[in-house]
Image (cartoon, rainbow, N blue to C red; front, side):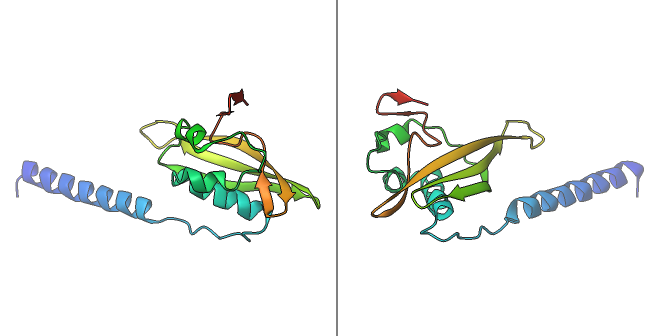
Length: 147
């Protein structure tokens, strides 16, 4: 076998291994534990799942009754396709709660770099359960009010 042909075969083998490795990396996804839907953390999880899925009417249902946010406010929000969210902290009393999450998104780096930001969700206990107050991520404007 000539050196040129051997190099070509070696190149094809290396490329095939790289493709298989990339497929394995993208196929492996950590399972997400479902939190108690009645807890402040569970409400935030359900809200974020709805927002990421662009089910803005469902996302709005997790907001407090006095919210000025509308589904149209969510329409203007930018949500990347590739996103990871992790629970950082949660505290609660009988009537209020605070849930902090870390949101990790791609920073556009072709080598897979990411950007992480911390968002805190404040919740109040209403008759129907825990509800998110204020102007929550991914919106930055609701009813003419800004964060």
